Every structure is written in structure tokens, then in C-alpha cells.
Length: 87
View 1 (spheres, rainbow, N blue to C red):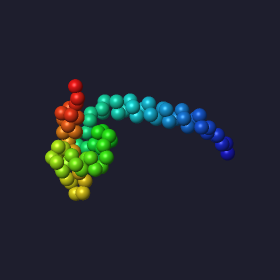
View 2: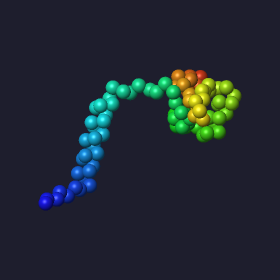
View 3: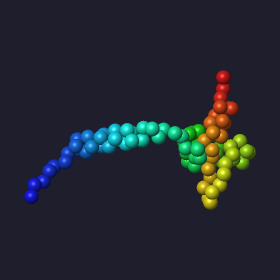
View 4: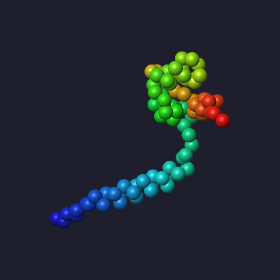
């Protein structure tokens, strides 16, 4: 019975090969999702959960609910960014 020793460098090389392969496979799939969850919107706008709630409550950001999950249309989020852009 023979054993092969795998080093950290071997694992790093394998990781890079997997990442490269995934990028090749997914390369054509750079399309933005149409609907975003709250966490996605907060990360995109760099805002707190309370600020996102205020945007919902005052009608600035339209949303839809499916079960207990809130969804926001990507175009609406971009529209808010564009409207609030300073010159």
C-alpha cells in the first residue's frame, strides 16, 4: 500500500484550479438578479436594518413579501441610488 502526502501548497494549487474552472464555467452568467433579499439590499446600499425599514415605511423603496421574506426589485434599488446622487 502506498501513501501520498498532500501539502498545503498542493491544496492551494487545487483551490486555484477550481476557482479558475468555476470562473470559466460561470463567466457568461454575470447577469444581476432581478429580486434581492433584505441582506443583499443592505450590503449594496451599505445601510443598517433600521434604515432599510425606514425606506420601506416611508414608501421610498417598494418591496414585496413572500412568506416572511421581503424582496426588493434591483431596478428600484438602483433608482434610489440615482435619485439621491449629488452633483
